Amino acid sequence: IYTESAEVKIPGVLDYMQTMIEGGCKFLIFAHHLSMLDAIEHYLIKKKVTFIRIDGSTPTSSRQMLVTEFQEREDVKVAVLAIRAAGVGLTLTAASTVIFAELSWTPGDIVQAEDRAHRIGQ
Image 1 (cartoon, helix red, strand yellow):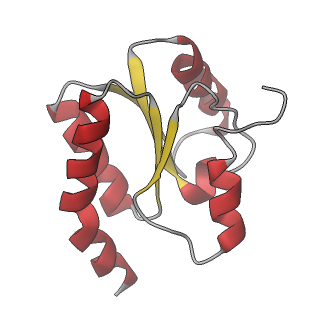
Image 2: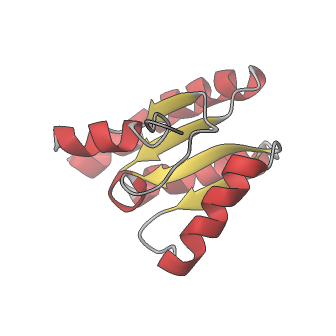
């Protein structure tokens, strides 16, 4: 049922993302399910929006390179992130907004994920 609830949310998430894209925002979007992450990725490709994606399949050795791209390249507007894979240890302070397409059952995961954009001293 948790996966089904994610799939029902996809149209609303994509609609909200379009608003953010039109506003020129640089943002993080977190999700839990691959179906949601894949839908977001396909939408961004269709809209020709430059983005990075970090999920459980992203090699650890590649993650910092992707973070650097997001942080330093003005044309990279979106970071598509799995809550569990990218919710800790990454600095993504170039983002002005954090969006949760889905929430984790663990409140600490949400706080940690949000803090990727709000690092003290960054």
